[in-house]
Length: 631
Image (cartoon, helix red, strand yellow):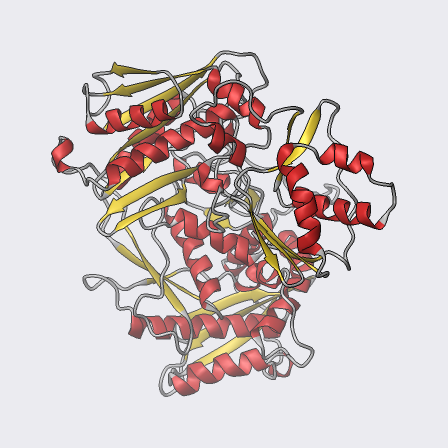
């Protein structure tokens, strides 16, 4: 991470003085480059550029020695309080502290006694190097393998020994030959941090230094390469390793000669690195790269492949969540970007639990389409399609539809957050309601809306589908409207089959989404015929339920009208809360005669069982049964 700070124009208050007996030093490994009118400082994780005065390089020459030697506090004491020189020094120190380029430690020499093998790494990495070094000094390591002397076990042992840990090698015949467990045991007393909260920026895992806990990491081979789990308890890493091997596939020929040579040091070093960080109370290595694809608060697994050589962290939550940290659940998504990132983690092509919704080779005009194949044990493959006003919304609809079909049981609705799921469920319930007996809403109330004009012209003009559209109010006392598009048989006669339907807060919104659904159905029939003669199934459209997600944090231009998707979604988002209340009254069971009215929603039902439902909730998704929350 980098930042540009005009030092002269942006004075900053100095950080609080350290605890007596400690001093602040420049973090080892920080490189400094003088600029024409400033400085650029680069650390292991972060960097900062200070600009605003040609005197900054000279000021740094004056400050660098005390900063590196631990003499900053003495230097500040000798400077006159409030002087321009002291303010300048305090401004630089404040920026260094804000960008993690300072470290606090005991006064005196930065090291006492003989240096340890990992001291340089600890000083560059740890917020409290002395504490982390003491933790590693009290740690003992054990490497457990299924067969004695495997190449992976030897490489892991060498990596741990290089960090100064005593290493014991043990054989466990119950372990697969292609897997190694490495454990760290700490002895000194200390507070315990919850194991399992790994991944994302700033995340850490495991026991605090010297907590007395036994922390483990599993590393092994799989079909395409290898993996290294997040640190956890011995039972946790054993369960995750078994699940990963099932998901990724078994490795090829057994024995060291059948393994990619380039991956051996990579996997061994990565596993040892994760274990050392957990034992020392440092952030997990998955947090180092500030990878926005990783979800903070959830564990990340390292996956590696040899052809071509590739290694990366992936957010992955296994089926057996034994540690308390592994049972954490993300807060519901607040924006569409949050939801899309979580979908991407759940559908990862290597370790994801659900099929990935992709545009594939489908035509994206006149309506964006995404597709995925559903494969379930004992069932034929099904092709599912999603359609919406934008491709990202189509992919989200398709993901939710695929999850609903794969859940254990029927009647479930999945959404990115409670409001999204509730809106999808309420619309589906209202659309299944009794046919409207009232007269249709006059077309003057909806036909002029630019979204209706666009989708209706696309259906009847561009796609040449003969159809008719009617809009009815769902009930006299409910501000909600049901629109239905039906085919129009040649020569008149009775209305044909339903091509699309929608329930929304206004006649125009309902008509627009009903026409969009009809366009999607007609376009999908031609673009995706399905597998082995079976037609592709169109996932239900979320309609306006997704609007609050799509509009959150998005600014629209003043000249954009309702014909622009962004402005239309923003209008829908503003009506969604009131609309859901109205639909709830319409779909709620009728009260017995004489019963007092209630404005309270029904109490949540028990959360649905099944591993997939639990996984969805861990990623912040909502799973409903009917239109009731089931979290």
